[in-house]
Length: 123
Image (cartoon, rainbow, N blue to C red; front, side, top):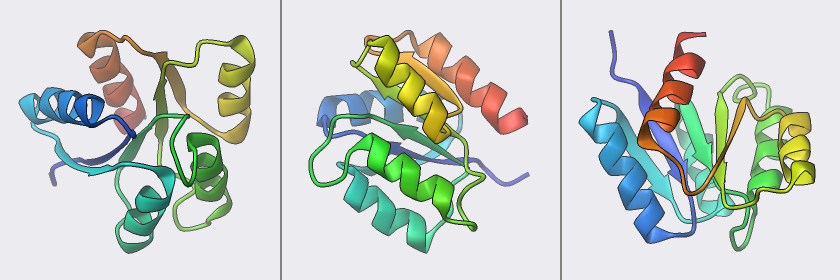
């Protein structure tokens, strides 16, 4: 089986590096993007198996990228896990309404993130 490739999208370098470290320790391949626009450019070139997505980012935020992903027939089926500091019920509801598969708050437990990834990739 081919290794799973995950795109980590967050404007925080420390979060990107931490999530990458967690994923690499479990054998996942990763790519990163610092905002939704950079992620969009990468997704057009390569359809990752899963996207981990923050909400608040410059240029194109997580909601905008999620909306774009779900509207693109080629990429609409990619699972998206929101990983964000936004803990308002309205933000979670909006993300799920736009098509997010899972919504996790920062700070997060690595085990919760890995469990969510496994659930989405094995679904």
